[in-house]
Length: 334
Ligand code: KG4
Ligand code: ZN
Image (cartoon, rainbow, N blue to C red; front, side, top):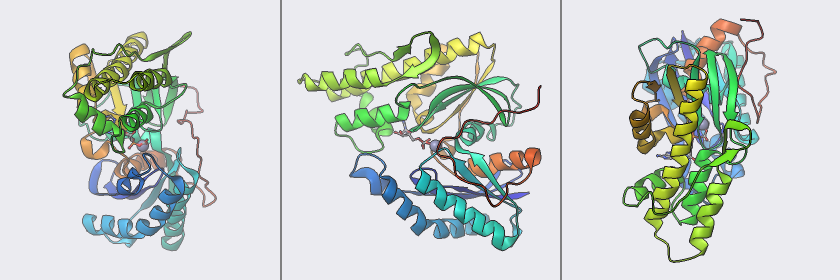
């Protein structure tokens, strides 16, 4: 089955053609980084306008790269949330138009679930469920128990900033470019990670919840006090944020008896994070997305949609976007 995937939840316009849930025939991403860089973050109105401009060329490029015609596509898949409402609407309406014009089924999937699927679609070895899923992106930070594809239980989430958002905000304080994650990681390489005693936040009675706003404020105060070393700030902040993730993840994996951890989201591009896990838990199986599937992309949307379609069939053309969309739970008792 050939699935065309469309992704437009935030600031990347992406289209991909994927066969049978895992074989990527094309994965085209039109990044808007240049557009938002001067503002230090995503400007929703600009993002929407750019999605409108580039969605058709991106679609055409993805078909050309896959060497397929539109008529050969069996299913049109789109990320229907969570994300920015205007941005989501562009992708959803493009998907609806294609579905109607080609008389092909339409299906909407969850962007966060797709980030986790990016790791699952990239492994040959089967994964034993339940396993722990860890989403670390610019908009979301959460841990979930993955009972199966399409069946999740929330373990913990951030009560304030997402981890990627914290990287972006600290980068802005240091006058680094957007997106801040890669810039902080690069600057941290020449810094002393223990120079400043930053710590990730704890949430009372919720050992698996995250809080990054206090950490961000601690960085702000250190900068305001003057006479600081930017590289040491970057390294100390990154150490604090990543260690917090490592320790909460390992505690949750042991609490729920999970042998495998599946990672997803833009922050998992961070090599220091991957190294920290390899050192802290060499016996656990960790599944990371390959770099081309780490940031927002449509291959993960098309791949996940293949399985969602087998399980629950198509969505109606009345399908709507959802700016907040919880991960799916199976209604039937297991
Ligand atoms: O998953 P993603 O592309 O978009 C959302 O769904 O939010 O994640 C983007 C986030 C940004 O906040 C960016 O700064 C962060 O991922 N990021 C990183 C790295 N590369 C991207 N954070 C830390 N280290 C990196 N190397
Ligand atoms: Zn994302």
